[in-house]
Each structure stands twice: as structure tokens, then as C-alpha cells.
Image (cartoon, rainbow, N blue to C red; front, side, top):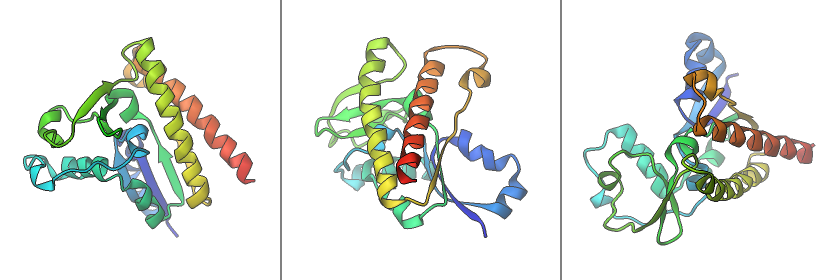
Length: 205
């Protein structure tokens, strides 16, 4: 029987299955993929919007990604698909950051033409936050990120106790051949997430 796999991360995690596609198709089935989604956005409240004002020029993939951000349905989708394996990576948090709305929700800052993507006439932006521009920004961002990841792990413990959670600890320095703020942030997020996942396994056992 195929293992059912969910991915909350990036193409860097999906590519793990593409590298040996024939064997992957025999052994695994990807039942959910949320691309470049910040965990801060994942765990925040849904955003009210008028669908008639959404950018009609977006590709189907971008439109689906944007609606994932606005509707915040990823948690209910995870419950519905009941994956055997859940793979996480933190590309969205490291490279995109988030925008905070006046209503206190968050959206991943993943669209180059932000004003054309989100219906900003309805969604009022309070601030933009990044994880890798400065120490001060990292501290503010990582504080919210850690709280969000903690709540996500609690959600998994409650609703998906049989799901195996794996953190894709991508070696960003090796991938890019350069050391910068992003590589250090990614490493710290990986270390924190692995610690939380391990603790959840200990509690479950």
C-alpha cells in the first residue's frame, strides 16, 4: 500500500519524490502540497475578501496558492487527507516573510506583484516582516514563528497522532555555495523544529 504524503514547504521537498519518480509513484502518493506557505500564515485566522476582486491574470497555480493563504483551509485539509507522512520545510518563512493585516492576520509575502495579487482595496496592510534582513527583524519574526510552529505541532498531536512528521533539513549553504543571513535563519528554524518534533514524539510515547 502506498504511503500518503503531505508537504508543507517548497519544491525542494517535492523534488525528493521527483528524483526517482518511478519508485516514488510505486511507494508514495502526494495527497496535499502547500507551496511556500509561511507557518505564521498557516496558523493565523482567515482573511475576508471579495473573490470578484481577485487578480484574474494569475496562473492557476498562483491562484490556488493565494486562496490557500486567504482561506486558511490547510489544517482542515490535513485532517481530511490523513497523511501517513508530513514533510515540512521553511522556504516560505526564510525567503518570503509575511505581511500583517490591520485585522491581525498574516499572509505569506510570496507574490512579486503583491498589490496585483491580493485584493488590497479590502485587505489593509499593517506591516511587512522578514526573517533575514537584520537581527532585530529576525528576533521579532522568529518569536511569532516559534509560537506558530508550537501551535502547529499541538494540532498534529491532537488531530494527526499517527502521522510521521519529518523536517527536510536542507543544507542551504551547500545548495547555494554561499553563507548569508538566509542560510543561518534556515538552520535555526530547522534545529528548533526538529527539537519540537522530537519532544512531541517523546510525549506521545
